Image (cartoon, rainbow, N blue to C red; front, side, top):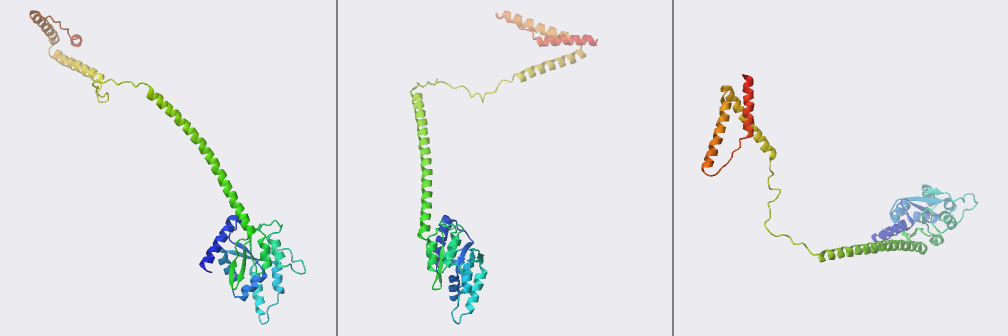
Length: 315
């Protein structure tokens, strides 16, 4: 098979698959005439059908067609061909048409039409592919939508183009898809217009708010030296100051305790010395004309009294 023809057949079967839902393995109804011509041209019918349809096949034959093969008379000198016909027919799956009870089989046209379109609705319900050499059968099958037709022409297997009835069904289905797409698009556009109007209203509201803000008088910032960054300024450590004062008091107390142990009168001397120093400072200040009064530190006085009490207890 040439490449151009093979490409055409592949596209054609793809169209049947999209519109009429054909799928592999394809069910091929064989007539007695195509079996006889394939044997005459020495063609391998199964492989040729598979190459033409571009997929696996499931060959089938009706009971009437088999009876026609048995009743056929071969040409003189070709009696062995009849055995080949019957072998090919037996290798195919038997399709029960219900005409086996008749004394004489129905014509292939009537039998195949009753199998393909049993109810006369003009549709190929079971998705059969018809392979026949009889023109009457092909003409009858063109009236049924979605029936691929195959025949042999001078030892070449041909797949017919899509019939008018099938093409009309395909075109109607494509138009329905286009209409559905247009409806969906219109609905989306309507929703988009509505959203756009809402967005424009929101933008207008924002513009009005911006205009009102622009019309309002702006507050002038006070100019001058800026203060230090509050994050870079160290905070006063109150707890550390209190701790340092407490430590100093404890150190003074420890010094006085040691001195009181060595000399019991040390505490009294220290107190008197502080008093004398305070009086001397006051007289000096008075002579200079400036009078200052120094207060005794409460902590030291408390410490001295505490030391006196401790010394008395020890004695």
